Amino acid sequence: DQQVKQNSPSLSVQEGRISILNCDYTNSMFDYFLWYKKYPAEGPTFLISISSIKDKNEDGRFTVFLNKSAKHLSLHIVPSQPGDSAVYFCAASVSTGANNLFFGTGTRLTVIP
Amino acid sequence: GAGVSQSPSNKVTEKGKDVELRCDPISGHTALYWYRQRLGQGLEFLIYFQGNSAPDKSGLPSDRFSAERTGESVSTLTIQRTQQEDSAVYLCASSLFRQGRAFFGQGTRLTVV
Image (cartoon, rainbow over all chains, first blue to last red; front, side):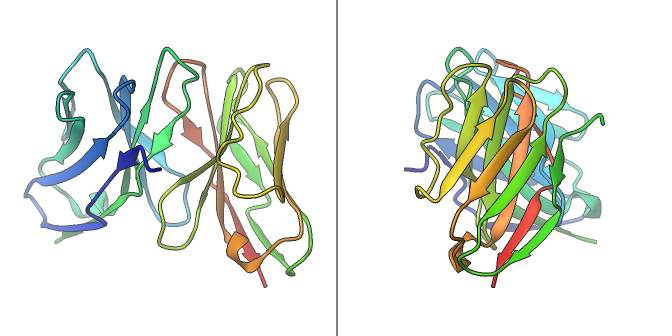
């Protein structure tokens, strides 16, 4: 049973435009959410996170939005750059519980120069 | 080292053989995760260790899979009687408890022929 879902396996965006990656979750106990970026032949690297007490967190070109009522989060990258081309995973955990991390299936972003 | 280290980086084994994968977490990280990523798939949770608590083994796909961790140090993932469907990249990650953000190793690419 997939508790974290990324329904778009791939996304292509022109350089300079906005990339929006989406993620949905089913477990209402999740209160901490993360985005990871993965290049081929490398392990995922942490990108940005958000706690459920917030609805937005921004770090440079990356912004994560959380809609708790819809159990939905999104990652916005603006402006998109060719180096952003990678697979993006969202993850969620219950910070007051066992703290296990549950991952989505990933979205492959391609930024076209 | 400063990061999560996994060995070997690549392993080719014959069907039916046993393999052992190693993970050295970041020093001081009490939480340790194993995931695998099959070709074209997302991150599949395998097992989670947190300090001296009983590990969460709910993701192990069969009784051919087992993992150990001694204290807060090295972990080994063992796959017995390997099958071709075990071919995947096996990723290890570690984190401080309740910090949420996990750091990944570069993975072990296992190929069963």
